Amino acid sequence: MRFLISLTFISIISLSPVSEVFANTYKPDKRHEQQQTQSTTNRGCSESLAQFQILAPSDHIGKTALKQPTFLFWWHEVPSSSLKISLTQPLVESPLWEKDLEVQQKGLLELKLPQSLKLNDGDYVLTAELSCSSQADSSSFIRIAFSKVSLNEDNSPKSLAERGIWYDALAESLTKSKTEFQQLLEQIGIILPNEEFSDF
Image 1 (cartoon, rainbow, N blue to C red):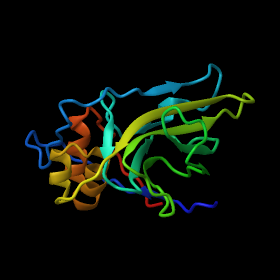
Image 2: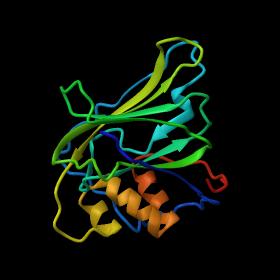
Image 3: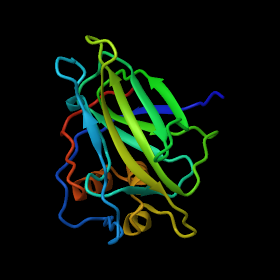
Image 4: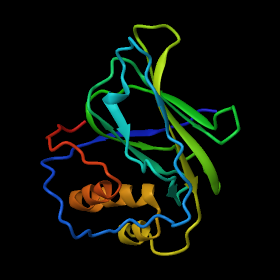
């Protein structure tokens, strides 16, 4: 089965200092599960995890209420190899979906899962892997867990953030206000460089 995927680079221009008063306050569930982030870079491999990061909580498992959620990446450098994205379920070896992508510029990358892939409520694992161009059968990867939940209420960025729906709140805030987007990131300890990027 073939899947279509939306891959977009977004221009972030002159990020300004963030106010101490947050427009959207992110409130993860007090009973949240600890994030089991995994990452590795092989020695001697030119493709490094320092080249990119997934904009996700590092101390707990983020949530989405969408069947086709959006994930955001930040690229500090353009990799020389393709990026392999795979989506799996815990303890299930076969991926639900996987795709090789070409990253063509640094900056913010928006990754939307295809409409043909509909997630049910439950736990999932997203893996982003860079193959090593200098070493055969070697790679660098980041792996994060996330949960799909159901909501039947207001889905504004403020409401999503206050109910701990990280991925949807972050994606929605980006469409509303760059300041709100940056504020959400700062609440989980992520500060993006203050640079200018051209349109993709």
